[in-house]
Image (cartoon, rainbow, N blue to C red):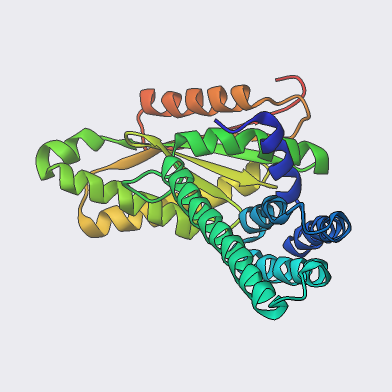
Length: 289
């Protein structure tokens, strides 16, 4: 488990432009080079170059990490060139430079690989394997941040729950592969009908959620109606006997919470299902709601 202080440090630098991270690391490396030069050949400092190289690689990527490697090698050379003895100095310096630079490069490549694996695992943990869209965990993690952003900028935020009516009949009559294909078509259709700034997620089973930033109830209703029209066309073309029930909630007040929006959208969706299915019901959460 990553220590809290390290998570905070990485989070601080990940919020900065990569070139700023590289510049900060080079300041540290420059200071290390100065200390290296002042302490003489008895004390070796090359291992202390590793942390800034690792930081640049983790935060800014392999390419800038290798830039940090090259610059670190140059700083080490400038700091240590006057310190080597006169006997065989060029060969000794060249060998030490090669060994140190190789250790720097190995570190950078190792950190880059670990970051790649970590990012892949994080993506897999937040992605629904069946449909390729974010899963419930990712959606629930994104909602508070979007709500905070809406509050800061004074913009509305809308959330929709979509449930497939009679989904079980697809599995029972056409098989589970047809049911899986239906889920993939739903995810693709929703994503195609929404804006790039909107979020679609599969919550599990046959339930999907949509998060619509900067959309009041009217705008969100229009967006969801476009989604439903696209879905109706897709299921009709494939002759799938399903419809869709949607609960839609829009927040235009600072007092909304994630839990309230989720509960309200879920309740509206189930009201639609109880009252005949295949419909959309919306609600605007005001200060008095």
